[in-house]
Length: 159
Image (tube, rainbow, N blue to C red):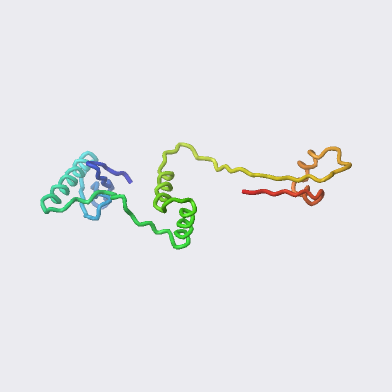
């Protein structure tokens, strides 16, 4: 959806196919403030007029205008995810709010390329006596996992 911006307020810009008009409303406030126009420049103008009228009306009635996105919102994640996040945050010594802020910052971080997922493997290999084997390297590459069974090697892979 295309959005308009003026004085810290955002507004929608949509097409009403029935009337052929461009329509919109001020976003992220619970008060319903709408506007419409026949052209894009006129819609921008009507949006700005709607914001100015909204602010003026709030002043006239002695009420603070709602600010878009106050910084507080509810997040519904389900009890299992909530508990897991709370436990992890406690173990990490951070507040759950800090976890959510970090997740949102990562989500919103600008990126132009897909980041590859990487991780390390630690492998411990214990070799036992292999008398009579001339070259172990070709055997490792040719047989893979059966090396453990055939020669009694102990391999531990941790993630």
